[in-house]
Image (cartoon, rainbow, N blue to C red; front, side):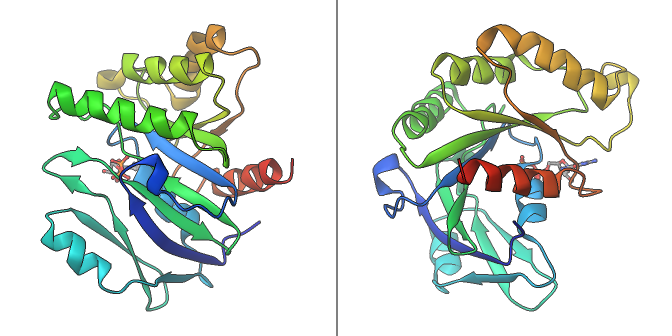
Length: 234
Ligand code: GDP
């Protein structure tokens, strides 16, 4: 189940442009700053990992278009470019990474970006919802929730929408290594996780699977990969 090979395939701006080979895929989505890049990085980073991009010019090309690009270094020398496509605060790309030549990890635009004007936020909503509803090889959406803070309205709305539309979902709680802080509601991550599940109970016929993670300690990394492998074999 481990990641031995991860390759950036493409950034798409609409569902129809996504890769069409039909291999199973898992989408990561969450509020901006939830820890999505860190988790993605921790999922694909391994000593033996070959991080490659078949399109060497893509970084330069996207940079010229004004996109913000994150670069992830493996412990070897090869580099994986992750175009986050944050053009003037907009995140408008679906990024596909092919894992072990057999399935995709998909990085979706973050939501709830405070600085984004209303119409951009509405665009995001349409854009990702279209992907959720019209992507037959999407096995499960991994909804990232920050476990170091109390539930946010926008996260509850997102979970509710996924539940109502019966989109298969896995809850991934991030930042579980963080200690409780008064300014963050004074609860431990475990308590926030429990509260969140309580709050979304009514949205689902059966409670979605959930995994507690930390990109600092790597907690949950193997559990996520195992869960994805089990879902692929159903
Ligand atoms: P994104 O906007 O969702 O891609 O979030 P990032 O991965 O860029 O992370 C946002 C911030 O949260 C950064 O300052 C990270 O260092 C921090 N962060 C991300 N994951 C964790 C985690 O598991 N534990 C802790 N303590 N901090 C984290």
